[in-house]
Length: 342
Ligand code: UD1
Image (cartoon, rainbow, N blue to C red):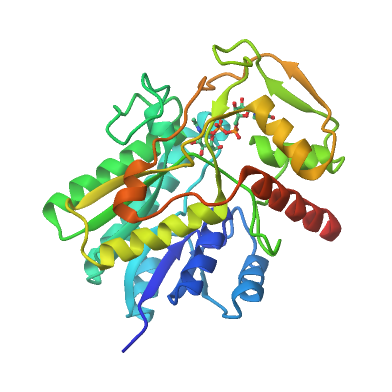
């Protein structure tokens, strides 16, 4: 019997690359489509060194409909798509809203249209807890209302979710929307990890670069929030754990276990950590003292959010396994590799 092929758009990116590794290790053949706008082809080598199997790689932009059609024609064994390819910087999306709407919406439209044209009906979509805004009730469940988006980036996630739900009404499309909380860490082999371009906007890459001496000190954005230590609270999820959720989602659709055409799952640990607690955990895990100062709040930040991941546990059979210490140690190990190569 032919091995099922999973098409992974954005497969050389941060979460995509870790997902390709987990898919391969679960026995799937994978095809990566990536335009390398925020990653490099060397990631494919890193994946290959971990798994011993080279994934198919097609350098193409999902916004190019003809290129997508050609890829679906070439790999006739595709049974499901995991769609990561998207622009993801909240701040940049405010400066360049049209770029975000074009990239994130057109790529999904092209992927879904070509899926339907080629008889591929299973899709796993990379969504975000940003759709909840500041939830009234914590931990947040999938039933919590979707609030007006705080950025064009967040809005593209909401619109893409709607596109998939609406499409599933008229076509045989079956989808899983995974709402990620805050993905952090790297593969324990340090062969792949996050590669931020320029000054990192996200907390953990900024922490590891500060620890490596690339940045002088970390700024903690606010200590006057209504939280126990005054800093913001997030649910930091290990990227390998997160990658495994995609394998579970693909299997869930393949097994026909979904009760509705499009199912939504929170992917988080269920535990909130403040910025100051995370800094403390990093120092304990690595033994490195991190220079930081408290500065004013960052515009648009949500005070606190963490997941109720119960549905992913009971329905997908998924739960986060990695400890925060191991996760931060993996992020640090990866930073050292990146510095060594720089
Ligand atoms: C946000 C979105 C997330 C999106 C991500 C992409 C929410 C709840 N989350 O994550 O969906 O995928 O952006 O970029 O909207 N911080 C500092 N100093 C720093 C950097 C960050 O104190 O130098 C703090 C932030 O104020 C925040 C926490 O660290 O409280 C996490 O920030 P970050 O890593 O940027 O992620 P979010 O903003 O939570």
